[in-house]
Length: 346
Image (cartoon, rainbow, N blue to C red; front, side):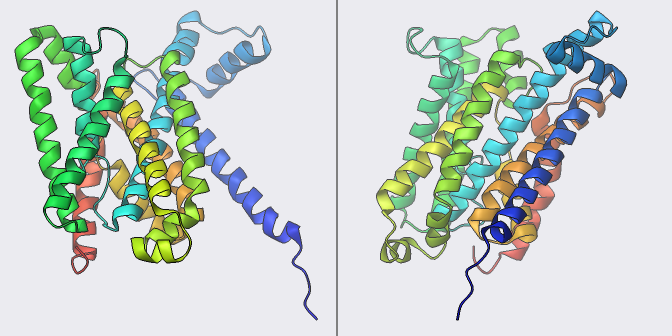
């Protein structure tokens, strides 16, 4: 006689992991608010939160309250959303193309999004009908299409896709540089080049309203198709034989990746290596099953980019280093390690 499994035995570990993940994310957000160019005592941050949420009436310096609510908290929340979105994009692309080096940065999606955002900003493409995020989405979609066509013409393998992505990335980066050199003044060029390296200094609450829903929607889409991504890990034909509607799932996942990448690039610029390194690190921790890999990568990406933003503010006193520089300092050695560990499969 078989004994039915107790639902609590299944639900309880999931709930505990969810609570642990929420606690880790909350702690990272708190660190992002407390640590900065001007360190703020935890008691001041707690009092500012109590005043804003419960109208507690505690004594808080207006300057400190402004730093917390108008600068550090939205900056930290956008960093979390961008880190989660980019890490999820890497998870999806690595599953779909079955290549350890696939991520939005290396496949040219980030470069295309940057080119689209710059075209809207400098040239006014769209006549004001589309915003920077819309231009970034169009550029990311175009870049992915160009890379896919080039990879198919070169033979259609995963190695060809990565090489096509590198070529597409260089093409759209060159297009961005050409637009800046031709149409931007010196002040615009300096600001755009700093933004393209990854810059969270200008984000405010409207950016949180855009980044957070996109990250949540992308997370839910990836989690919904977690089992399909498990099937794609064995190849497209294997996924089809298991009953996965290949074309529909591919379109949904690629659409989610394009939306997340374009939105995050339009807000903070092109940040590399998050989508490459974080999924591999989380596979080492939780294994290859996407039901666990998706939430683990989203959490790790969010925490990683929050910590990278803290480092970017503290690395050089009195100066903010582009966050893309910090992620590259961590990601480049990780990229080399991935190359060595997967040399037989690349």
